[in-house]
Figure (cartoon, rainbow, N blue to C red):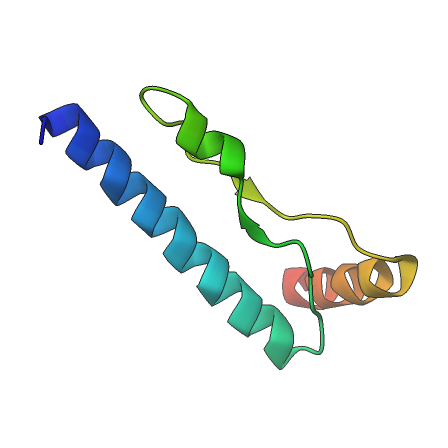
Length: 74
């Protein structure tokens, strides 16, 4: 495996890990982002451009996220 490909694979693994970590932290605060994932387009580029898709959520979830972020910013 080339050095560039290894770096890409490592980057995708890191993105998947941070998605899981973010989902766990959000769940702890009562927030679920149903579409949270590594953006599938990431896998189509050569070399891959690792992107995290935060996804879509309803207004109630958005308000919860805003409240948590405001609290954390204090």
